[in-house]
Length: 187
Image (tube, rainbow, N blue to C red; front, side):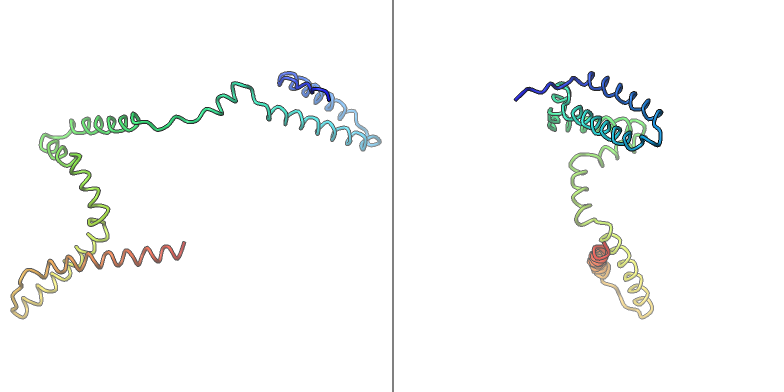
């Protein structure tokens, strides 16, 4: 049981380049009579070159191994702080360019408590489907009630508009659910 000598990558590159040059010269000298012999030699040389390349790729240098094994740095609290700092700096920069009235309105709107409340409402009650359904239904229903009441002399109590807003919101949710179901079935 002998110990195999693993050549360094630089030695294998030099030897394989020399072998490749020799093979190229032989290919130029090839005649139809010895074509079968030449094909066998070139196939053997190709197998040897493949083994050399395989050995080179299997054994990376120690520095490359250390770089590959290093895990990515974990997400830190400083990354979150950097994001928040960037946001506040951008907001301050934009607000400086606004008129005094717009600047004060922007500061009120972008206060952390109001932004969080807005995001929660946006994902629940104030979704576009609910708002659009409520608005259009209230407009159409309110206009219809008003026209009928005016034509026949009825008085409106005021709850018609509230009922139309609630009904329109529910209608918007229903339409959104139906459209999502149809999209899922198509996918």
